Image: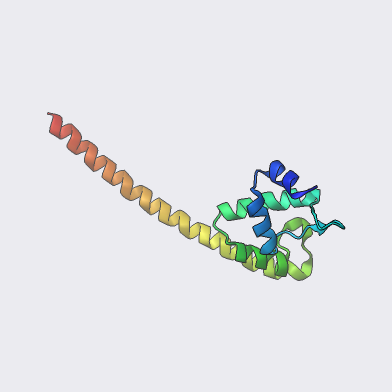
Length: 125
């Protein structure tokens, strides 16, 4: 499929798809006339790239994961496992730290809401 079809299928802009190729996150084959030719696997890869980006993984980190570790479970082999484990353990630790910060923020915000609701009720009496 051509880049425009991949864009329509995934909802990712042409510009982003070209950027992913520049960052070596995608490597489509080329036709004789130079057009990019994407496979069905590229659809899943683009969806995974989008998920990782939403999780805060940078394109440079993704490039390392794809090139050094080939970090997708369906493409991995035993030699790449150590690299992938290290990457995913680090990301998991980052997520856990973010969750802890969010819990702390939630607790503080709950206290503020409670405080201001009490003032609101007391001020109306």
